[in-house]
Amino acid sequence: MTDIARLKDKFLKELKKEKSPEKRRKICKKYIEEELSSVFCSLKDLSSKERAKVGEKANEFRKFVLEQMSSAKGEAKEEKEWIDITLPGEEPELGSSHPLTKLQLRCKDIFLRMGFISVEGPELENEWYNFDALNFAKDHPVREMQDTLFVKQEKRSALPSEKKLLMRTHTSPVQVRYMEKRRPPFRIIVPGRVFRNEATDSSHEINFYQLEGLMVGEGVSVANFKAVISFFFRELFKSDVDIRLRPSFFPFTEPSFEVDVSCSLCGKKGCSVCGKTGWLEVMGAGMVHPNVLESAKVDPEKFNGFAFGLGLDRIAIIEHKVSDIRLFYSGDLRFLKQF
Ligand code: DAH
Image (cartoon, helix red, strand yellow):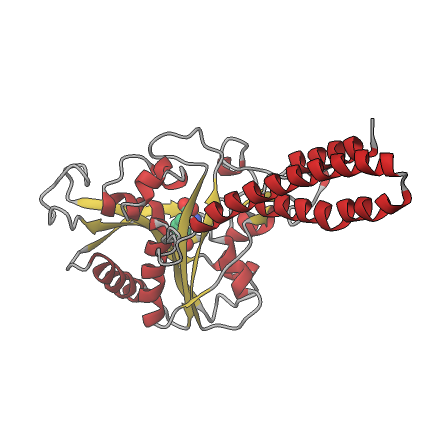
């Protein structure tokens, strides 16, 4: 193989590797200006016979490189001409807030107007805050595996309850976390995600959103509670809804209530959303149990208060007539784009 044939071989290999026409043109330029010009310079050192032979081959190769160069140039031009700078840019698709986020913000806004502040707590919680401090008995069934997502820990059973980790099953532990660091009076809401060990179906998910409320001070009454949540629901549903309290049980409140709101969709006449009853069950609530105040080092002789827990998913389901809670967590854009 002659030197020129070897050079051509190397040139072709380099050219083949490069996809961009602009870069291929540069390779051609390099061969003309550097490689071939040194070949031509060295011709003077050859015998006249050799010089003619090598010169001819070098000229052929030069012609070949120039052809490659002009075709690469043509391609580069063509590629450049595709860029039409007058075209409008590609608009990035804008996302929007999740329906549950929107609802959470609406709720927050109403409570902030009533002087509540919004606080947060950890999703990875310990058994003390989630259960003990809230006056749950040690053998309460809600602590069992089928309800609570416990976190695997070495020697778990030997740990004290403040070290045993779990995914919080409600936002109520933040009541204690907040109270133990401050002196009453306080008015807080705690929006957040909670977790349950559920077999999922259209009305159960392993995680969902709650909005906890707590107001503690001197002489706080059930009447105060009714006033606060009546205002809240009227603002939220933008209609003159009625509130009804039914006796219930929660370990952390005494007395405890289930709160119903008159169905704003049918105006108490009964429809498919309220199951023909005219009422919608929307939250659990009650007067904070003295044991809970004590767990948080608040004097129950001096202070009392009310607490409530609202299921945000449930409100969103009612408002938008969503048939399956799992849709909120599916990430399905066909569902999400409707809000
Ligand atoms: N934590 C309760 C639950 O997840 C809801 C609840 C009920 C919260 C009554 C409260 C309350 O603050 O007073 O089912």
